[in-house]
Image (cartoon, rainbow, N blue to C red; front, side, top):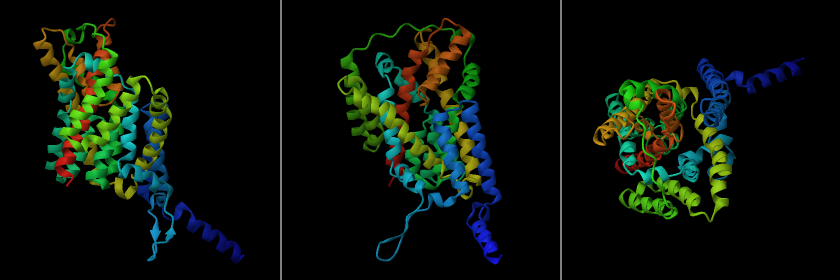
Length: 385
């Protein structure tokens, strides 16, 4: 009988029940809510499901993120948890850079090349980043942490993770969850801001068809952008370099296998590794803090001001062009590709069902990706030491 009782006692001590706290319970509930939103509401499921499941795992079994333990002679005593090794790809900036490779292979920069003024809209949409940066400073965050938090305003999850891994690793979990949450909520957050800042007449503006872009232009674009941007800001090389390499795969026409791999198999493998490891940084002890609430609020402010900045600059361009530019495409200057461009199309079509803004909005959208990477590289050059 004693043997049976000892056995059950040992099993209970080895189970998660022995270490589970009410804070872990809260995080498990949060993970389940995120899974519901991803599966039932279709909110960015490719990212939210692995992130939520990583969150679930680490709060059930914190050891899954443990680093290996070595003895004095350098031999491994404890191997460490599985997701710790996944997380190394975040820590070293590998997974975010490979995500950019896939994004580049999937993106058509033709609309941006055809309408270079889209770069200005992409730049204007970075307003939220700088608003959030100064807001974070006022709330007591250090320069590096404030810079990492502010990138949420670009609605670019990989860039947020990349910069957080370099400047503020301890905040990576809250920053990543906030960034991807707001990315998934683009169709909900953006339309009210867009409608508030534009008139119905402006939303009905039809833009002229974009000029055809030659294959040579599309091949030269990623090469020239890489040379110019990396010469000015070498710290952007991992993100901008991989983005442009992926796009060169797509446009050169002679490496279809690499294009398919980068935009499909590799992309989805990296999403699994990045998502679960990022989710696993949200242990109860790390996530349930006053700093997390501040980050969530700052992220929302940054995203709202980024959207507003793009729309307001679009209104200015509309005036200067004599009413030829629909201000709605400015909201696509945030980096959520291609969701933000689809929202511009949707809001424009609500005003006039015959209005097609998608291709025009893709210009600011991909410009926003480049712009956010450039801002992140600037912050890294300033605060990276």
